[in-house]
Length: 136
Image 1 (cartoon, rainbow, N blue to C red):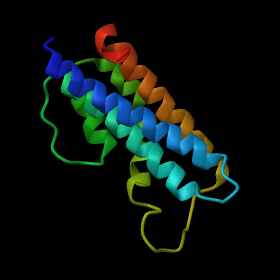
Image 2 (cartoon, one colour):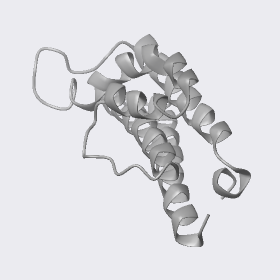
Image 3 (cartoon, rainbow, N blue to C red):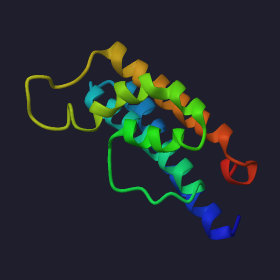
């Protein structure tokens, strides 16, 4: 794999890790920002999947729909299907609490679960990639 391709994949993973870390920090905050926590969890999972698709040389249309991304990943490796429940749970967090509405933020337990799901997606993707990419 050429250096530029490797770097691009690493950038997706770096952004995924940063979103996940932001979610963890905000979860511990004295101020309730659970809406932002789950948004960052969705973003982390999205960037993980896009990193994998970049590795596979897939040009991804702009989307926040994790199910669409997961199905693309699944065309390369069938065990991505194991992440379907996570994708279904996290996808709405891209918009659900981002705009005015009846619900301001999710339950704390939902935010905690979202962090665990995003971490699982990131770890799953990282294990699918060569060491030269995932360790960068």
